[in-house]
Structure formats: structure tokens, C-alpha cells
Image 1 (cartoon, rainbow, N blue to C red):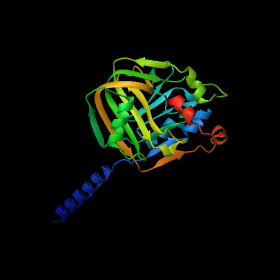
Image 2: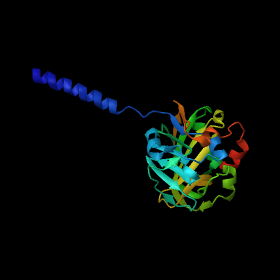
Image 3: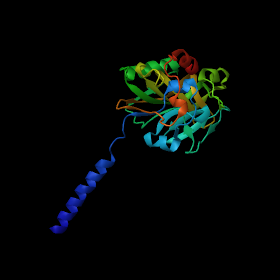
Image 4: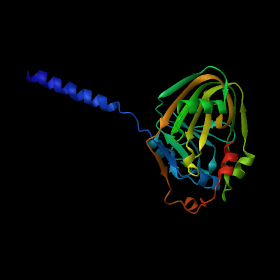
Length: 260
């Protein structure tokens, strides 16, 4: 009888521990610095990729000195530099701006006919109609075309981002399979994050990617995660460049020029 009771309680404890292992990941966004600081030319790195990785397995951003476009997909960081190639950055590399989350999609939709950037926005808006909600999303599939960009590493004194992108390398990717990675942010984050849609792209064969300017997808799978628990912004306490940046100016027109 004693042996039976011991086995019974052991099974209960095992069931409790296994249930605890199924706890869903936290559903919030962690961000490094602000988009307006980046627009002014604050390209000094504030956080290592190793530390950033503790806050998510999915995201986008850039690198110290603005050395290319960042993608965090399925827990792996990728760096698309100004030569258009995809690199695997070291954990010690730092970022001046990034936005990450634990990607846990709860909405899915098959794309069976060609759609472009604007049509994708409408698809996501129909799935997540509350415009004051963040959402993270991926679109995996076959693309007839993707236009991306990256930016070359800068030297101090850093120029404003709108000047950097005037001479940005633009890449025209033809028929390619890959993944769009992005966020939709509410209008109220103006100055902090990018209001609206912000997308990066990574080819399945790792032949290219970058910040998305335009695309057409022929078929694929859209997955969406409504992110509504928190927006946590890391404000670098020891950064002179961030601390002294002029963040009182409305930079909406600069952001539009940089993003589009």
C-alpha cells in the first residue's frame, strides 16, 4: 500500500511539472532605444545581441554604426550588409535600435493569389482590426519579386539616417522563396517606433534580404501574433549620444522617406 501511494503522488508531481513546462511565452515587445534617436544619427550600439536574445526569438533592427539590416527569425540572428549578402553576426555585436518578441502566432491565413505590400496590409488589418494593437507576423512563400535595401556602415560624426539612405544600395530580387518578417505598430508610438508596417525579408537559401521596399508574393502562408502585454523600451543610461540627441523635432517626413 505504501509503495502504491508513493507511485501515485509521484505521478501527480510529474503531471504538475509537465503542465508547467507548457506555459506559453510572454506576449510583449522589447525595444532598444527609439526610432527618432536612430533618425538623428545615434548609431552607437546600446545592447549586445546576446542580451537582446533574452527578450525574444523574433524581430528586426539594425547594427552598431548602422552596419546593415537585422533579422531575428526562429531564434537566429541574420545581418544583411550593404553588399546584399547575408551574414551570421557574433553575439557580442551591439545594436542601436531593435524590436523583438517571442513569436507565438495564433492567426493563420493561406495566400493563394498574388498580393503586394498594400494588399498584405489589408489582409493583416482584417485579421487584427483593432488598430491600437501591435502585431508581429511572417509571410513565408514564393515571391515573383522583392525589392530590398540595406545601408553601409557609417563613420563618426554620424549623418542623419535620411542622408544615409539617399545613397542606399537597393536590391531587386527576382523569383525567390523566402520569409517576410515584420511588425505593425499603432500610431501612438510615433517617435518611439515605426507607426504602421515595418518589414524585412530573408531568402530561404540565404542569398539575400534586407529592409523591404516592395514585393509581390504569389502564394504562401501568413502567420500573425497579436502582441498586447507590454512595450518595454530600453533607454541606454550611459550613452552620451542618446542622452544628448534632440528628440523634440517631429521627424515623420524623414521616417517616411527612410522607410519607403
